[in-house]
Image (cartoon, rainbow, N blue to C red):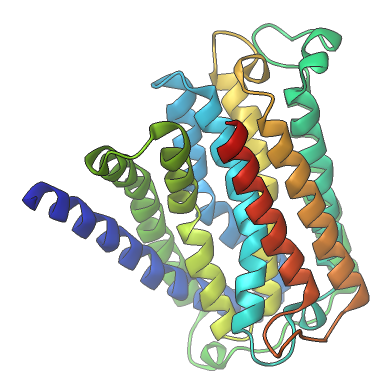
Amino acid sequence: MFDLLLIWLQFFLCLGIIAVAGLRLSRYGVVIAALTGLSRNWVGLVLVATVTSLPELVTGLSAVTVAQAPDIAVGNILGACVLNLAMLALIDALYRQGTIYAAAGRGHILTASFGILLLTAVGFGLLPATRTLLPPIGHIGMVSPVIFALYFVAMRTIYRAEQRRAAAPAPAPEAAVMSLKSAMMGYGIASVAIIAGGLLLPLVGVELAQAMGWSDSFVGSLLIALATCMPELATTWGAIRLGAVDLAFGNLLGSNIFNLLIVALDDVAYMPGPLYDDTSPLLAASALIAVLMSATVIAGLALRTASRLGRSVNWVSLLLVAFYLLNAAVQYLHG
């Protein structure tokens, strides 16, 4: 009983570290954007999203090298993408100054569009027909070089688009009293805390699943996906508290793009052969559902819909929740 209690305490300690560090990371991100003239979209997409996605990177690499479990690696990534998009519904419900889709800039449409392209590439690689259609390059699947190319094209295109807009971000209150050096130092410390907590959390989550007698195949994978997404949740919530909606969007959509790059990195690290060949085709359903969710977000951003249903959430958010539940049901019933 004491051992179980200790595991729960470790679990919540990791959550607490990530939550506090995520709030600070958002604050320093806003200050860096104000002091450098970079847009909050770009800061969220690159500086924040890369840090919050590192737990998925380490978890995936360990899954394909140590555990030899490609389903865990790819399932964790696609589950994290679906969960990141579902988080938009949560922050929409918590945001009281209208809807996040009306408050966010339309530049996120480009990021979400590249997310759809990368999700489609991964989903295509998971289809059984693709495995015979596209010959591998050594032990690497043909889809992985496409993912690498799409990722770097996405980063370059989004950066150029942000430069053309050249809209100065709203000044942060801390920018008047904090230097860029202090902001970068704080950003670094918060990043280290998030990485440490994010790396420990999946390990504690696996111990917790075993101690509770939960199934490794479904509950374990779900717990790992939730655990590795905690940095995104904490950082996004911190951004919303500061009113930095663009930073929140950039973090979540940018994390999805970086997560899909991780699939290609996992494929390179998986030596028995192409990662896609040894992964369940059922995970292609998660990629498809994530595509539908991304398209829903694009519709909300394009329409700048401001209405709420029952003074609670927007119809876009309700669709995102419905798609998230559909993915959970599909993986549970057929996994």
